[in-house]
Image (cartoon, rainbow, N blue to C red; front, side, top):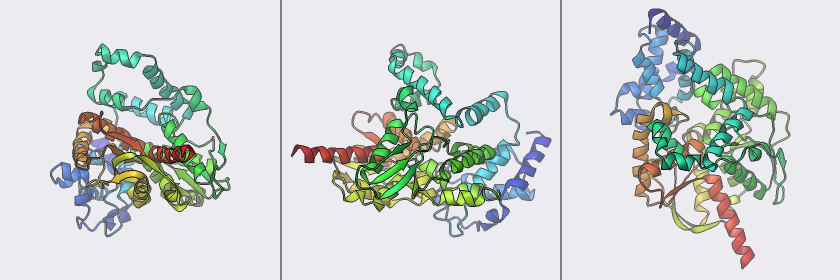
Length: 447
């Protein structure tokens, strides 16, 4: 960094950081044992929440300069927010991290390639659902046309960088574009109606993970919910907010609030931990915008994870059944730390006949996915994943359940890396629950 660039970044930190929140940190160190990067870097304070806050405050106070090492510390953070529940002072580290990245990435001079890549992803792709469908459908064509098989047979796939090659192997089967376009906007309950809810369908969830969205809608129907799915909703903005694109995240937030706020609903249901936590944070994201502050609060107060509403509606009391198997659960960081949803998924899994549930050690420690972290910080991500897989293997589970698409792909990657693909599977919670419910209904029908 040149001197002018350093001055711009330092000024951005002074303008964007919540100094009161920085001062809330008492340096007690309770956060240290919960931080994956602190653990994996052999207790390097620079890569701990306490250390990062000290760097942020030092930049604001002008006692340290914005160096590449400082930027590296901020980039290395997973943003898992595991430090928040254990903090005696209630420091909202996730908010501070977003502010710090915004200060860096909106000020730091970027290479042409980096600038072009970020512009394409954050401005041209994720905000536009039709473009998401177009790009995702190309992956589906690659999978169905025989190109994927040929790429592997001829070893052409080896020309792709190793990290992307590994991710290509664990991608779900992508639906056809027609299926992505022909989405319902309103669905009625199958069981006696108990709630009227809206469903946040997301961007990747309603393309690459379309099957899981369909399973979510079916579960809500079986639980007695009428469901509306506003067509004008957009990407939640989490990827933008976590990557230093705060202004674009606020644009996404306003689009979503406008899409849902005039609907007469009890809740807005989510099925992706990362999306749900960011939607839940809209109130904070727009707190300085007088026009949107109260509207954001109303929106955030309606956010509810699918596992929470299913417990509220006593779905765990219904007949649920799968083939006998050992099952463990990997927490979504943002579902647990951002939405305080921890026991609900476990209660639902344990209610299924045929399940022997075994709790994984450190189930709530990040798996290393963290949005695009496993691509941009591959080495640390794989280090964290290796630890996670060691704990998963100790359970002897044949099924690993999770509640976030990134976690799902990361655990699939871990299974592949461990050579367990023939004996172990990972599945989203709602897909597992739908299988259990419909299997139990088939058993009743045939007896």
